[in-house]
Picture 1: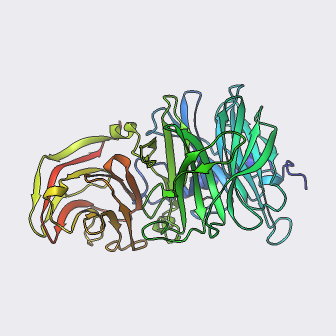
Picture 2 (picture 1 turned 180 degrees about the vertical axis):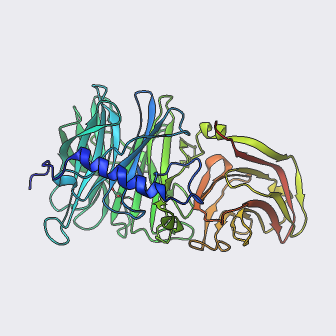
Picture 3 (picture 1 turned 60 degrees about the vertical axis):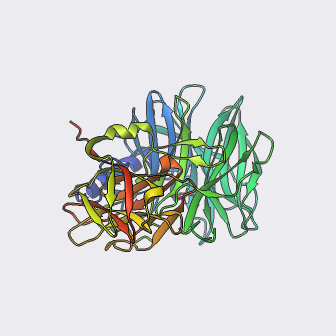
Length: 494
Ligand code: FRU
């Protein structure tokens, strides 16, 4: 087998994929389809890929299966825009067409080369083609002159002997050199990050392991990302095999980071333990890039690992989170509030400067807020309630997501006990500060919870009935003093 040999014409493959997505889009049910988060027109999406600012536009590519709302043979979908919040559809960028990517164009990243062209690095996935159970993953390159249409150049990095799971190249420039981190599973089944370098983006050498996860349960590190932030280095990965520990790592796979030091030629030295990027049920495989103004921006995939996602019945599945801006706090916690551009999406609807809730009071705040934002600042010193919570996306059948400050455990909790569609269960995000500001971003099928301006965040899918989706606030077993509460609705676009 010659890895770079075409088995199909790339342009034909892309045209077929577009047709398939159009057919799904024509029948799409929009009850949970995002009004302001990135999703495909139809079909399945997972990881964000190729995030970059290139030629005056932000680009978000993503793992995309255009033939059904389930995971399958991966393509790269694409949107672009100038302001991080309004996105234009672009044609599908990559489809399987050469032997190396016969079973899928898996995750990867983009950079602008010295020649001004856009270089996309992705994992060529080949599964069961060379015999049952035989898998081969290689890092491949495709180049675009216009930021939209790509020409495949084939394999540029092959795994070292004994490594089978070897994927998700993340490329960036480090002085004179280009660097690439790749996630891999060692022959002993340990999750590792390997590093390659190049002078011209085409010829790559290296393969040294710069990091291995210390817990041997973790058998693979997907979607690695490595960047300098606030004078340190942050190594990110999506860990497979991590065991739940208290409130941490409750999802099937878990995305997080360690903070430490690193320089070329050296291993990464962690100074912190693993910390989750997001404490909700639905967050995985984030990737970051640097905006022209120097901000480090991250997007993640809002996923349902249990694959009971009711979205699938609607002809589509999967969406991105809002873009989040990363900054490092003194205690090595990375703060992740949404980019300021997001605020321009909303317009004020109601405001309360001070609100007292008596014992067990439940107060209606809004009859219908399908898409919008709810911000609450709680005066903890003057609150005796065990929990103070918001019911959001509350529908006629009394289905709602409950997002509450739980004083007993010192956590913000996202509780799905009262949701009728999708999975149940709750997640809890520990809050160390003695202030409590919640900002909830509601879209038709999701709720992102931002605590204390990004100190912790939680991403939750939500599947309310069609019709009005109300918001109310309640104090459980005590009173609550709300210092400030603001509701905003999604601005209509002309
Ligand atoms: C993470 C992941 C990546 C892989 C891609 C395939 O969700 O498994 O490791 O490249 O998805 O779609």
